[in-house]
Image (tube, rainbow, N blue to C red):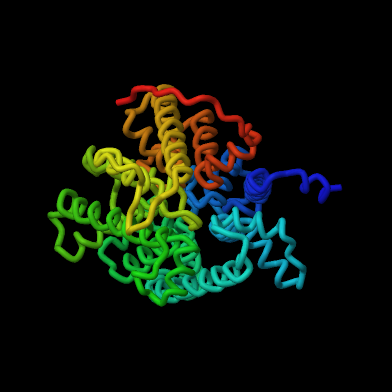
Length: 441
């Protein structure tokens, strides 16, 4: 009966429903007395918020992760982060392969949509490739962090902290266990530690590039000229969005620090806006223009088919290329001697408009009902919609309505606005009407 019902659903509806089911299950597990440090039952809405934040790899929290949740609760959170980062169907595929089950063509199609692959062909090999390398990167990150964590917290806790922060960083989640030093302090105690900074930044960037980009780089053996157009756009856009803001933040915010520490701080804050959510400095002390810069970077987010959220680097790149094509009066949008299809431009326009609309509406509503500055509300909403997790300390103080808004934004940011619309709206008619010009601009 269940299989017959699922057979009537589209890929978008199944992906959307699977994330919702995972979030609901996570919230129920977090409600258990064993999940809290003091053995009490955490209110369901707070559990739902935490579960959504973990499953949608965001990092916004209403309680300090280290002090409120028990080891069991932290384990539930990291499992939600891992499944949310890879995708529910990627994990389901891994279990199917382990059990020797056959993967149907429909399941391959859902898996393709889940990881934003371009074709169904080769989806099994791509999935095996990405699962293998996910655990390699996370293991390497954990091993790099463990010496520092063991030094500071002892063997048992140091090993757990190394694993937790590696998975959280690679999945661009931003959850941390540093509240044992000071609640909600994130990685501020390691602002000048090159091992922690570089390891976390590397995990964030690699996780945010996208699974398709990994495979392309591997297949072409790092030869840029042979990269696909998507890989070239992702790599160049990612570099620009890290380097330029990194230099700016280093000069404007951390110029009074020694150069090595200033560079680490500036670039870490630039990288973490790629939907990661960690911070090594007090973000409330940032200048207003730099807060606005981080809002923009958080909305952009990572790349398609990655563990990151946001409207995606390729969306912004396509819109910028379209703008230049219009300015230069070119008929087509092209780059690297390749033309970008009009359907891609239309989709990018829709995504950009949708994200900006959701961002502006939610920011205005939260600012109004909570009586907080618009920029502060915008920082929290862009962090939720981009599944980032950075905060100015406002999220734990918000009321029920604002928390529900942030939950919906985190869910939309991870599942994808278009996925939700495709799940709710049937495909339109192929009827074409006569064309008539409309003046714009």
